[in-house]
Length: 75
Image (cartoon, rainbow, N blue to C red; front, side, top):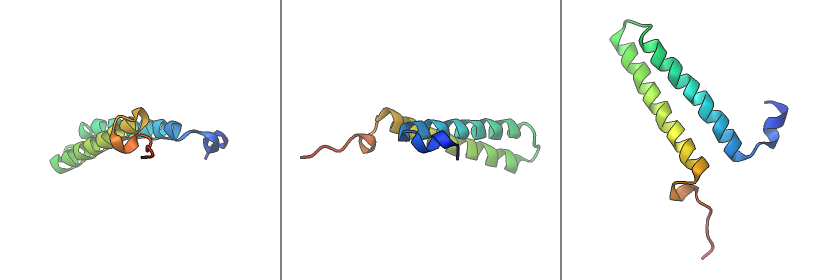
């Protein structure tokens, strides 16, 4: 862990994770063209789609666009 990571806000951690997921997604999609096995190609595409869903969840967290990520209100 980098020294400044300990002082990052949760949203900054989420952005960092989203970037790593995007890189992994791009690598999976690139590997589809590098392998000839249809099952491996399908696996890599499935993984890329799952990573896309995880990235969307992180985006929703950062934007607070889903009720689960909005601040709790006292009622």
